[in-house]
Image (cartoon, rainbow, N blue to C red):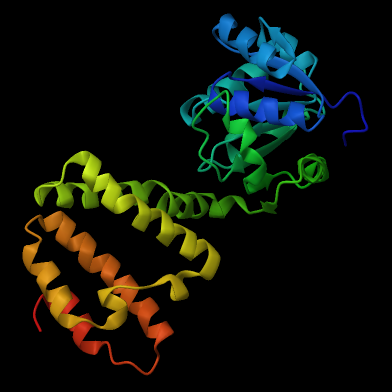
Length: 290
């Protein structure tokens, strides 16, 4: 694909994702056309950062781009697409970067001779000026038209990122998986901080206590897998400790979270120790009583 000089990549949206992908593609020697944003100053900033051009109209960007990345909030993707449909999109490749939405948001795209894809990095883009330095580690998922899929494959063959082609019906389950591994851990860490504050810890000392545990456990999961990383009272089948945990949880929502997640951990523990009897622990988590 990149042997074709007409395969310039343009961006509609100059936020964190647009900045990051644009600079990353530039660093990988992919040809960029540039940026359009509703705020022209933002497009100029992104263009300067990526050594590309800024455009005052969507039409101008579309004319000079073969691949167009729509890097706007999910709720705006369809509206941007409707604007693009007013111009010549023949043989253009449109990509959005939503983890949840599929390429079906580009409804009736074949009627204008274009091809639609969702291209999503499993990566938290937290800083528009620096995240490009880390996104080489990101895993991407791609979903959309089969006809031009080879062009998308060649793009990621050029960057070197691992990627997975997936079906549109699995997008929400895929996105849920990422939320479980990323966003929901924020909630668990927040609960853990709150419990330590209730024990008299300051914010600083609570984080000092939790951070090594949190980071080492994450590294162990990544390196060794869930079964081998599992430790603690559930793994040990420690009924007394679990019973005491249940007795001090006076927040009903947190209590239910503890029971549900401990049930999942029990299933993992049973896989780790198939000859160990966890039935009493399962009953304790279910009923709250030994």
